[in-house]
Image (cartoon, rainbow, N blue to C red; front, side):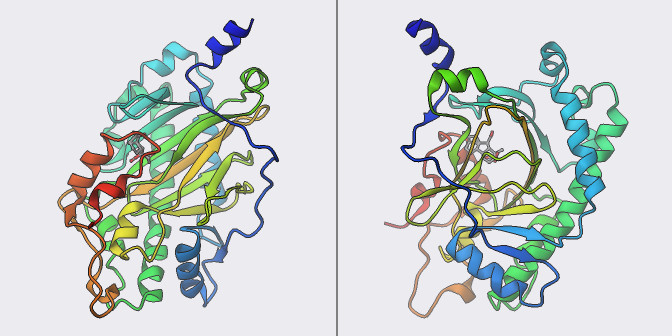
Length: 329
Ligand code: GA4
């Protein structure tokens, strides 16, 4: 029996904490219509690299429609879903994350947002290609618009002269952005076997500039605070959660933190999340903005392009500290 349970669990990691991690109520909440939003965003990015966004202007129907269609997709028989895989790098993936042996209690669709959604593998969109496709397109359009605004508020808050220093990288036709729909099925049996919390998506930072996440009302997302404590983010299906990515940490010379985060699977409820990852064009040099370098302060990082960083990231394991290779010694 012991052997059997070990076999079932073998590829997955579990977290065993002595005391359960409570929901963390101090996550910064930014109201996009608040005149002080830019100052609060800067504080949140410095302290957490993470915040919740309310009054964001994205219509609830745009989110719920995509959630319903994603749920339909993930409820299809396995052979149907497999037709949309493997994710190399775009398409359907199941349990395997990335190319280097990481696994999690998750299945997902990874989509390229540039070129347009309409040119993705047709197998991804299954029986109702037009409906699914246009729901993804509407969602990405709305979320991108909101991300541009957030990035422009960041530039304002940092008192950078051109307020589009960050947003122009995502607005660019060649922006290397992508989109992910994740489904974390309930994990009751494995959970019971493991006696701990089953990892849905292991700890990592996002390599891009900014990530915009929205989930259903199932908990699971955790972020790592500066001092290394993991805290659970209370879910909120009406809001977005913004993550600072590695490229933004570099562009602010470490002033903003690229937040380490992970997802635990829920024993009873499925979790669906949708994440837009805003990345720069491949040829873009990623370096601290000159106005953010204090006098006599040099860049903490070596020079590199987004292409070089991405290539290196795809050779790493999920939990690796990817920026380490690019830090000046
Ligand atoms: C993390 C952020 C995004 O989900 C992602 C992931 C990518 C993948 O799933 O293929 C990576 C991971 C992410 C970073 C390191 C590499 C690449 C899995 C992995 C082990 C799509 C991305 O851009 O980087």
